Length: 389
Ligand code: PLP
Image (cartoon, rainbow, N blue to C red):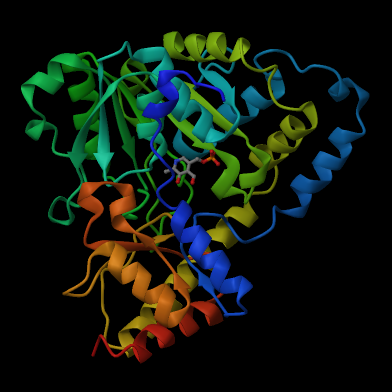
């Protein structure tokens, strides 16, 4: 009956929807499904943060509209976190924007930067929301392959001249979803040079910024000299503090772009509920031991899973950070056919790599988002398929 605007048809269809449907049907049929397909943290938000939310809910000041660009106390808190964790100095009023989760910022930035036909450089495989943002804006994507042989870093020298001429925006994401790779500081130096030389805005998606394994600390793009002149970082509380449902994220860095984000958001929202902002402040400034415990939990889950996979004769490379495992599919399968086999014959849900782009073919992504026992059980079920060993 209704004819939505043409831009709606540009939106990519949710690739994983059919998989979710199948998994739900299997669960409804009484099968014991182990869902490792999604990126939804399974642990609760720390109590101190929930308590701050209760306090916030009782504060009548927060029952009114929040200031349009959010409360100063929250912008100051995230700036303080960046000072403590990364040694980065940010002006809370000019270099911080509060977002409805990182996702909102990642989509909004294409609205801000792209005229129809302008190019955004996006990683392949990559987080699908970069594409959605570019599509809604009428932009064009030029993909940068992330290959195992290159540590899953893009090769800026391999980007075609025609794309470089129209490029306005560049997305990078480390620790990486889906490959779990981390970026060395030198990569960000190259990124600053590349962005400056070609006049593109660099957007660093730092959603997994707290999660590095084996003692490796993820580097923030903003630590790089010159980064704030050419880019922003998207930071979120979703993974670091198990707050995915709370929808708190930030854009940090370049003042001109932060002003544009605030301007755009001004026309959509009146910032987050004040109680949520108060709780987010507590997350950022309160005790950080829950973050260390979280990283240790993911690391021991990783080791439990990879130990159990080795027992069945499968020895892929271990994740360096994030909470994802990026596993090469066995010979004779595509990412989708292997994912189907795991669901149909082992009741395990994984995300097929092709859902993250053409160069994701040949891999499946598993999330370390259930306890060690279930991860070992998943490995044992895979072992019983008799593919490995
Ligand atoms: N970026 C990446 C790479 C992600 O995996 C996610 C969430 O899954 C996000 C951004 C968005 O997180 P949120 O919108 O919850 O802040």
